[in-house]
Length: 339
Image (cartoon, rainbow, N blue to C red; front, side):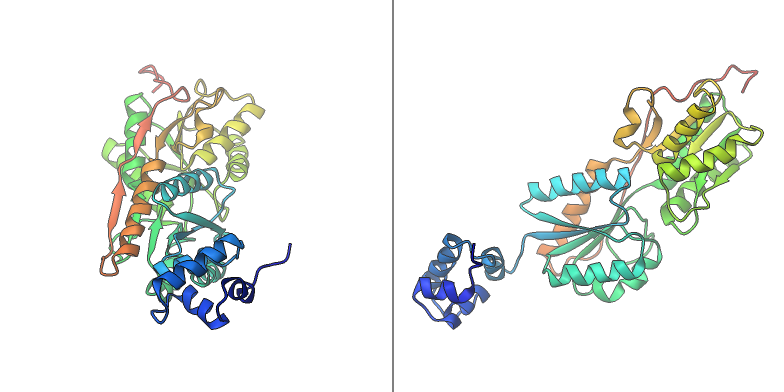
């Protein structure tokens, strides 16, 4: 099928090329009746710029950009699903891109989104450096960050209280009688992971526990890396009765390594995750975890962004949501002597 051009539209509408251009640009030099007639011809001829034409008249594309660090991460993919659903419920569509935790690629994607004339961008940043790196773009397009707590920065963000979530997790394991709790997957270069590790350390101090860590030496978090770290950990003497995994993906890696090495969970040690991704509730996994309210995260992120889109004078907003404990079967209470 031949691609319909603007000249084809002009011929079919019986007007000049320049009149079609004015109609598509929303120029006041032509009448409303003429503009509507031309846009109707565009629609009938399936002119590919028809949607753009209407958006130019309305000064809105009804498109939002969504930039993730890794769409293959279960948490990211689930969050993307909820953001897409929330955006569609408000009459917007999503353009999804993957930065791969690369700052240069992140900047390129911002330029791409601006070139595609999206109304605003939801960003899961590569790391704390993203804010400085993207500063010139943030003045050009409404943007809301998700998942990295900016603390006092004058940029809009929505995040779960990662510090509080980790604190809740340690308190829960302590109530079950655990006094030797290993924090698994501490990773530098991420505000999210920093806050979770700080919450764990604070809870240990308040409860009189000695912190223990298994650090993530990889550049990111995944089931694969959790598995590799767990294999190394299980080769050493065990000085813990519970493992608090920094993410559910880490916890899934631990479960895989434990099954291979005939380690029983929760009989040999309890396991607690963080995020509550969909896999966590599957049979034979049944992971107790700290839940990030993903649907609410998505809803607040989209609403915060649209507020900025629809009101140029809107300031920045900081929204921190409270995590909750989801109890399943991967943790057990210890007899007093064992604890």
